Length: 468
Image 1 (cartoon, rainbow, N blue to C red):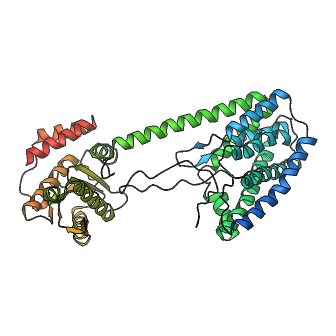
Image 2: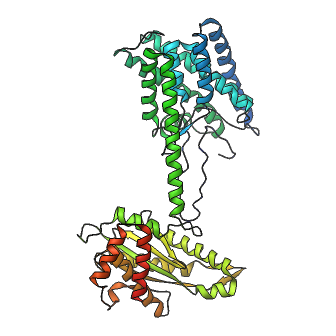
């Protein structure tokens, strides 16, 4: 879109991964319209929003005046749970938002009729104007369109045999699913109309994206929770509503904890400068993805890369320029490999690249592509071109070692072979005449990988220095 229109609420997310990782933006899922309504294009949007509000809000008032509400305790409970629920979105691991308010909304409709359902959603839709999250036109439209959706859902439910307040039986499941479908589709239709006005895109394209594409990851969970909530509330009343709310709130807390754990783990396994992975991540990845036994079923090649001339760059231009050169080389490495390949900063100006499923010949071609990319992609400092190169050693597992650590060590030695041969070139472990490490050293390295990542890093350093 040409302007900062937000059609649906979404979890705050920001790509903090720098140059190393690309995360998909979260999809939008909640059915609240939220647009700033600026510029000449705002006029047709305002007309559409206010038209729906002019139809829905009088209907809302009429419902509250003509349809009896439940008892005072239930009315207060529904109002409170509605206000809280629609302000507590649950962000699933797939970055999709679901709201506890929808199961509560449909439960209130099924158990207490439409007036109770209006109390759940309409105050929440209007409250966001007070909290400053949305403008008045947005809030009026949301309140109106929710009322229209509830009214249509009630009509369909009555036609399908539903009776408010009557406990559900086995025959009620079809009516429940039909009511959920009616509300969901009509809500998507009304919101899609506003999206079409804003984006100037075909209605069919916007509707498919709004109703299905953006919601397919969370639709099964939402339907399941809503059906369970409606069935429970028809038999247990207020207690079921509280159970549903507590259950979804607990799910939210658990997911937030898991998300925090993932973030902390990612921070611990990410190099703070280049934002690529570090050796702690490589250790875990090797343990999970690559077998430690050379059974021939797995194949993985490794590149060991070292920047040529890094010390002279730091001495001449300063360490800030050296850090920028590291980031520059990281971008080249990431742009030269596949999505499933792993680029890891080993330390200093050295990188390890793991290439699963690639043999030595293919890995050598990748290394040559990296060298060519560094030659064709200049690095500037203070307007001056900085001369640098990259030496790359290549080895393949299980061809060049009984363990993956063995293969990484051989790639390291091949890199030094390239560096001693004037650098800025590629050398393969096939050119090495040195023997593999003793079985005792290999066994110690293999045992370290299964215990603790820190031990693995230390062991790998020790094996490497012994080879030098």
